[in-house]
Each structure stands twice: as C-alpha cells, then as structure tokens.
Length: 103
Image (cartoon, rainbow, N blue to C red):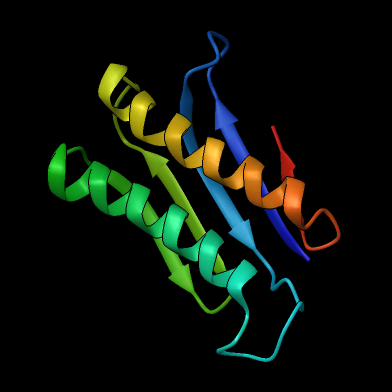
C-alpha cells in the first residue's frame, strides 16, 4: 500500500508531504497506480522548486519521497500542493486498497 501523509500548519496550508510504499496492483514497471502517485508528487516538487523557485528539503528513494517547504506556504505553493492532493484523492477513490492519504 502507498501511504501519503500531508503536513500542514494550523491554518490548513500545506507545508509538505511524504509518500511511502508500493501499491502492489501490478508488476513493477506496469503499475499505473504507482505511476500516477509518482507523477503527481514529483511534478508538485518540481513545480515548487523549478517554477516557483522556493527552497525545499526533500529526500527521494525507491518507494519513498519526503518534501518539506523551507519557507512559509503561500498562495502559489498552496495551489500546487492542493492540486496534487486533488489528484491523489481521486487515485485513492479508484484504488482504496492501494492508496491511503493521512492528513
């Protein structure tokens, strides 16, 4: 199972997230659930770093991704992270046995 944890401030703005595990819904390289989660989360990281030029702490390994903003979240980082979360929630709806989102 893929477990996604979303970190947020008391005002609800997202400050980071972690992803760990594998969905196990198909063979390695054929798993569209893993591919979807990876695409959404890695694109969010790239958008924050390369497009918004925000500093982040991150760690990437097989089956793991940890991302934490080094700055306070703003409207632009929030737009990227909330969009990522919307996509992840849809994947969770389609594959609840493979994806769990914790806030």
